[in-house]
Length: 175
Image: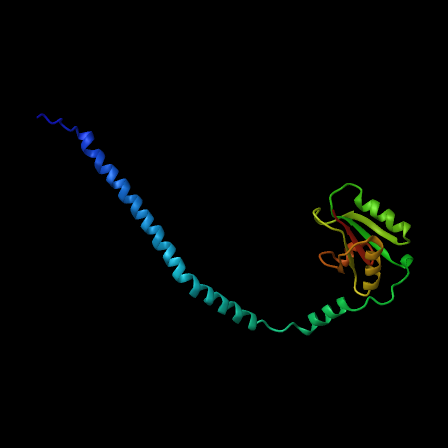
């Protein structure tokens, strides 16, 4: 009986197939070993992280007295506000819509407030309107926020008092 002769190409082919299969098996074994290592090491690592975090929280120094007093002042009752006609307000456009600050300034004038001026805010992406006040004008800031239906009120932050044009309060008109 005559057997066909194998060409060199046919002799190489089974070797390639065996190599691909062996590589696939090795890749699966590696994935299984990595998964096993992750399962074995996850619990000790999580305990170490929790222990480190608990130690960091315990080492946090107490708040300085100045910060504690400032927080207490912010949460204190507003007190008696000056009349609306004695309060000057700077209105900033913080939403990027043309005329938003001017429109808000007109509304404030109808409520009896004096307008120190209008300008664009440092950036135009405020999601909500904000009322800010200078030291000693918290009661007026709270009343202004109530008049405009604004829920975010706080001391001047990110705006210098000199940017208020002589005003005591700032309104940033947001989106």
